[in-house]
Image (cartoon, rainbow, N blue to C red; front, side):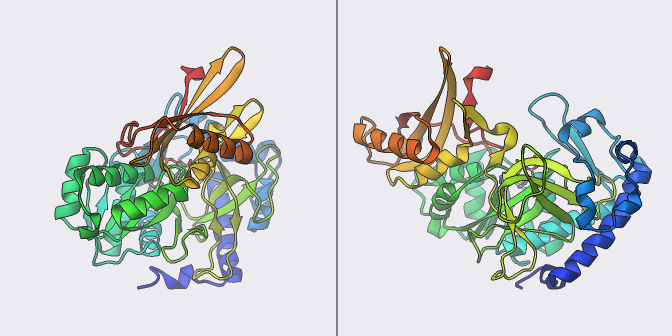
Amino acid sequence: MKYYNSEIETMPIEELRALQNTRLSSLVKRVYNNVPFYKNQFDSIGLNPNDIQSVEDLHKIPFTKKTDLRDNYPYKMFATPMEDIRRIHASSGTTGKPTVVGYTQNDLNVFDEVIARSLVCAGAQPEMKLHNAYGYGLFTGGLGIHGGATKLGMAVIPVSGGMTERQLTILEDFAPEVICCTPSYAQTLSEAFAKRGFDTKKLSLKYAILGAEPWTDAIREQVETGLNVTATNIYGLSEIIGPGVSQEDFEEKGTGCYIWEDHFYPEVVDRETGKPLPYGEEGVLVLTTLKKEAFPVLRYWTNDICSINYDKNAKRTHIKMSPIKGRADDMLIIRGVNLFHTQVEEVIHQIDSLSPNYRLIVEKKGVMDTVTVEVETIKGILLENPDLIKDITKRIKNSIGLSMKVDLKMPNSMPMSEGGKFKRIIDKRKL
Ligand code: DLL
């Protein structure tokens, strides 16, 4: 099986656009009539639901932001009565109350559909077993992947996060072909196998589906070698559905993730002005759900930085998004320079003596903000290594434009991920 739903996944763009337009115009009427927030938003700028006939009209609608969801905590953004809700998830914010999202049975069916598509896109097949190490609970990762894998016809092993030693045993004994977890946890598992001296070629694993946090090719290479898998990227967010908004194809690695456009309409806009940007330009990803019933959102400001573009050589017709560079609110501004941790990860990737186990420590020294890169070396590299430190410092300065202190660490000495989203930045200015 090459596609989960070839009719949709390879639909000609014009047909896809027509489908999006029909879905959008009926969605806009539905949210206007059922969600007071959207009625007020439209009325306050004199916008009528009939003014939105196609995706070309979307720019007339203001963005929906995380603060709007928080102001309507917990259920005021729901467009269906509670009796129609079949599941509730929540994403923990860094401050204050979580964002609460709801699903009708039809929404859960959509969730299963986009996950099933994503799994096949990542290499999975119905007869395979899936080791699901995303957290089960209010987080959408565990149950979201679980539902879609069941729909696809896979045997799901619902391991959830943590208890790394037990995970190794399950990976060895239960013989799953597919693993789903955060990229940082895949690093942890790979290092734990290495520490055991276990040859991962003996595992039956073939594919790793990694997401929920930003990652680059540095981690991909470490995980692919360490776990003997093909690793692809899965993206999503609770406010839109959970995982499965977009997925990278296992045979088109490095070309971006397909956004399942029949359900989620993407725009990329300028971070400062909010103006839509041409394909290929980097900005904030803004998403509109096209068929959601319980928790539809119009022009949701994800805060995630990426670009989108069509790939004429690809298997599917849907648009692709580049890997997320970081979240706009996680961007550090150091001495006037914008910094995402993935930029440092890319530099680390170029240096053979380093492993991609790293974190950035940000401090204020006097009036100066300073960044220290703590990074593990690979086995056999001396920590007292002025030439290596000089080389890393120079490469960081050349590619990012900032001087950073480099602190080399022994292999396996840094804090590791336990399965959730891993903190790559320790900002001591905020402690
Ligand atoms: O992280 C859903 C998910 C679960 C995605 C499992 C993939 C796999 P939230 O907890 O609501 O939902 O967090 C969403 O996580 O806005 C991004 O900032 C970040 N994120 C998710 N996937 C990726 C990815 C889930 N592949 C937030 N690359 C999003 C980079 C990602 N960042």
